[in-house]
Image 1: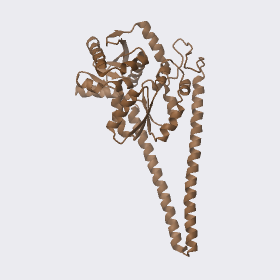
Image 2 (image 1 turned 180 degrees about the horizontal axis):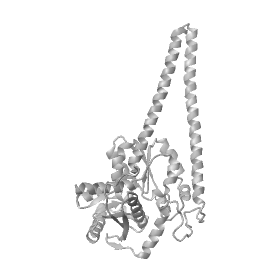
Image 3 (image 1 turned 135 degrees about the horizontal axis):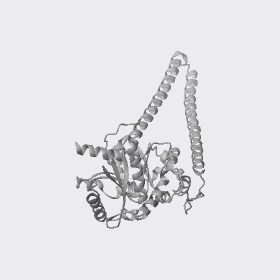
Image 4 (image 1 turned 90 degrees about the vertical axis):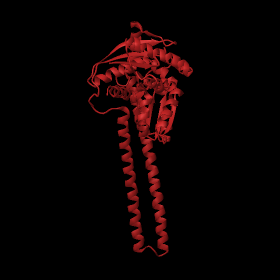
Length: 396
């Protein structure tokens, strides 16, 4: 079965192909990468040369391993560039970054624990002082007796019941978040594949780099339609491909693929927005980190259309994408972009989950999990399952 993975840039599309090739193998199915294509500004597609493909693969290899912790390129060359403040090729950089992040997380946890303890103790003292004042008043009025003792016991039982109820609510909420995360990230343990087939993946990139892709996304809808219609048509006619995964949040926000494919029923297409629509009811407050505001607007619109009671708190930062594509280390990116500042922003707005609104961002997944201590929603695996569901539905 042929599947085309479309993304904004060559590195992004290759990351998608590599992810899905490995993901399919984890389902005990066979898969392989076949070809890579680069589109031009008119929508014509050209097969990428072997030399160019080797260079793209070398850059994409930075993102593999344990959530992209292999920071050296294929030839073990230095990662020196204008962004990387630690581009000295030191293999210990990941350990240092992890240790620093863990230390920061521990410090944040301790601070929060002290703050919560202080707040709780203050509340308890306030209640006790209030009760003590009332008790003194009762004594002065000669009304202490057995009635007052009964009231004392009743008050204590009431407060204990409140505390127990709050704890139950907290545990129930935690359980709901964990279940929602499983759905969002599609991580059921060793599930049986719903569709057994051999998969062939094709890599298709719209632009040469992320900045040119941003320019493309700013074009009029009619201009983007001309380019994408030509691209899809050529891929279907020349490579006989009808199954597409749009591995790009911002491209999905910039172009209405849903309406596009409704008018072309022979195309089966899945985007990240399809996944966000399905999980919108799982949380009330969403945090979103995206590459640009086009992606952010598309994600917010999708979530709010599916859940009128939801709130979306988002930020966008193209420098994250530029530095990731340049191979900058995770530690340097976290420092350069002041990602730590986002933690308080999301927590202050009571965000329950963070959407990774760019397919580049799993490169920072480990660091972001430790920083936010919240579920991270990465739609990649869910998109493949959604495509399989569409294939099965069409067959039935």
